[in-house]
Image 1 (spheres, one colour):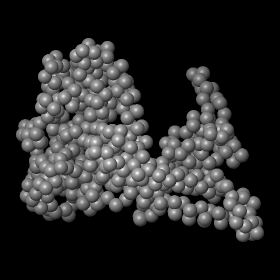
Image 2 (cartoon, rainbow, N blue to C red; image 1 turned 120 degrees about the vertical axis):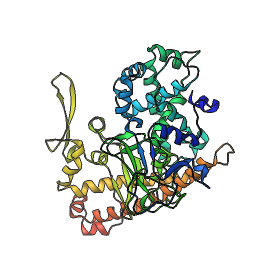
Image 3 (tube, rainbow, N blue to C red; image 1 turned 45 degrees about the vertical axis):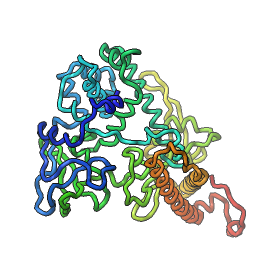
Image 4 (cartoon, rainbow, N blue to C red; image 1 turned 30 degrees about the vertical axis):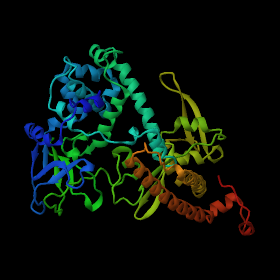
Length: 480
């Protein structure tokens, strides 16, 4: 439906019409406009200074009335005066009460209202038109199979596959939850007249994922006009966004910033996000980005670990670890790894207990003390064997990083010459591979240094039974 609406024109408005729509609905522009930046039209629209901006600018550059904010709270308010939107959200139950569920359902609902074939759905509101200004973002979920093959060895490949599976589950939940509603059955799911397909769910996901901001005072939301601003990190960030005491959205020039007439007003989407996340959520990388910044690698509990099923059951942590840059150094963090490296002989135990309602559950214990797995790292730090646990973790992580490097290097030839592969995805995949490989190679060195230091620990020496003579021996020890 959405793709068809873009092609036929009933779900598409030129960006030049945005100021008229915005000012009609109360948006205030103070010295800025929205449109393509001359010379960079291929990047889409952005926020541009109409005259020199700098010292003395105290008025917000943009003021967005709170009624135009696409947030869960506002959608619930719209639903109070729109019976069909209300029954749509109610049918989704818990999913419809999340910000993501409410926003995706709302966006699809607005697209449906705009469809000329649909005459009996929805109440007109200002945001019916706003969806027409939102561009279609080329996120990796829309890359072809050939283009996704370029991601082999990167952390983006499994992320995209997991996202597509998640979207399929969401879409099936959405369909089964709404197919009993008369107008949904007729306009969305009917074999002959139904308009909605999985492609539509992917498109509203891309709209939300690429434009949602965590707005101070409003939470996760889409903020019309502000969400047209492009990203720039560090000192290049020109403006901040927040809400005022009335709940209106504001775009504010950063203190000390000077923007010439015709210059771009950029915001930050999050300076701590890694290269993978930027391509995943926004479909681009900054030209100035020279590092992957952060990488998340999965790690599994070995199949031969007798406690594996119980560990998986009690763990609330993501099964992997994060490698990241901090102050020009490389570090790592993980809650999950500590559960992987400890065993029954160390003091880990599991017991089955019955709950008040008669159900049975597994409870973890550390040295006979009830264990919250989120606090396991703190418990282990207090243990005399802390250096031993660190060594086990370091060795496992180093092995996993080396495996990732081998996978990346082994897939170097994946840079396709297929003419069907678009230049944008090709360049992004090449840059991501280069940046992730560089960070992984630095991580190997850091982990190797950590391992060397831990091997000198008295606790580790004693645990391994290494005498002075043993240390002079070249025989390799398996620390995993």
